[in-house]
Amino acid sequence: MNAAVPAVLLLGGTGEARRLAEQLVQEFPGTRIISSLAGRTTEPAPLAGELRRGGFGGPDGLERYLRELRPVAVIDATHPFAAIISRNAATAAAAAQVPRLVLARPPWRPQQGDRWIEVGDAAGAAAALAPFGKRVWLTVGATDLPAFAALADRWFLVRRVEPPDAPLPLARSALMLARGPFRLEDEQRLIDDHRIDALVCRASGGAATAPKLEAARQAGLPVIMIRRPPAPAGAAVESLAAAVNWLRPHLRP
Ligand code: NAP
Image 1 (cartoon, rainbow, N blue to C red):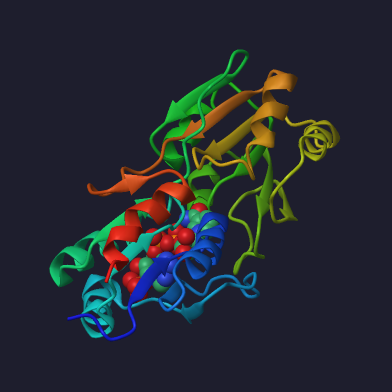
Image 2: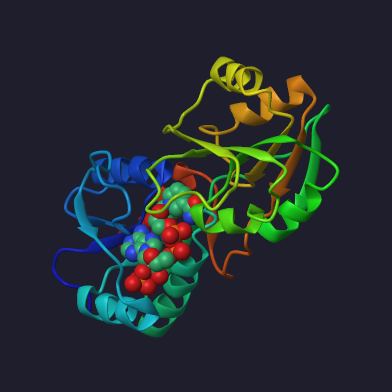
């Protein structure tokens, strides 16, 4: 039995999740829209609806949370590279018998002029750099950085949203703090100013960080693209509108 006021648990931490929370609050008045953030960002942007922060304590903790809340659905709108929480959500939602949807932004597709080399992980990206790049722009996750530590003859530009907890594990590097969306002209200037000759990035998809790919294409740079981790099986959509439509029948009286 769902509680008298229906609830939706929205696993967030992305711009898409923030925009979806806004839409759900508008579309479904009288429903609790509860966004969940891991709590990594010190000052998250304001969110529509309710907010909870911090981990659940693994799949068992999330299952307990779902059994207590009894939401009509869980929408996993986390980042495509946040693989652990997505896996936990799949396991916990199945165990607690709560319908689950994945909202994942559409992947990028290579275009004419792109020089992409697709690899499976950060170690593969470091290996793929062998023939390229003395000055490499790294837009990867903090946990990916150690994979590049052995490349002591390269200089790396590392762009991150939040300041790292520890010094970068790279012999020669510069750290830049910035939050997207990014503009093409800024990405072009960054490539010029730092004399970048290769880009390493994750296949995150979405518009906010796509201009770096266009800048790399125009500069003729090789792009080492780390593939997405596989998403857990189940219902999945790529747009906010499709997520709203999926949810609608779950909220019918
Ligand atoms: P992750 O590796 O998949 O998850 C690690 C742990 O963090 C999970 O086991 C869970 O802890 C907790 N967690 C993650 N997302 C959560 C959420 N939305 N609500 C509550 N707990 C959450 O995750 P991650 O890659 O560190 O990403 C953390 C958050 O940052 C996610 O919300 C993601 O959408 C956002 N984000 C990630 C990236 C990225 O590059 N990975 C980029 C942009 C934004 P428990 O096991 O204790 O439940």
